[in-house]
Length: 174
Image 1 (cartoon, one colour):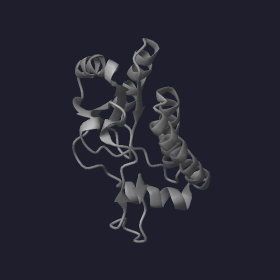
Image 2: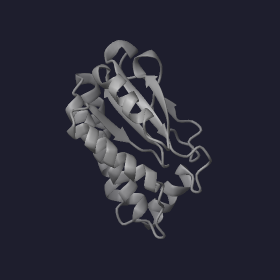
Image 3: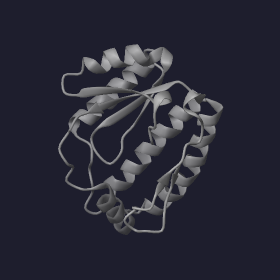
Image 4: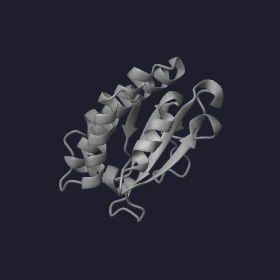
């Protein structure tokens, strides 16, 4: 759980664990598309969206609601609802950035290709879901039963460097 502090630069924010590492054996595969620094920082992008996007206020309100739902779904181990809510939340944040004036586009063509692949994998029965922070890289979460399949599929993508992380063994924040 991420607690915002009082400082505008975020230097006093804190993260708190909502369940022990052993609560749920989730994994994530981080698909690194771009290793160099992005052109627009997360902070700059959000400040710009707040000033210029017609969707910022609505997204901000929905993000608060989504967070409470996501926390509930993690505690209940409801993978289906967690998947839907995390993906929708991610896309709403990027919609807000895209509707800024001028638009902030964090994705690359490869990001979109990966989202298409993930949808194909999901239709094929892979229990996984994605999120994308303010950048082109994609993070895919899955349960233990899908870990090996997901990592194998991700490893075949020619333009990414997949990194596998087991959430139950250390802190992963999203």
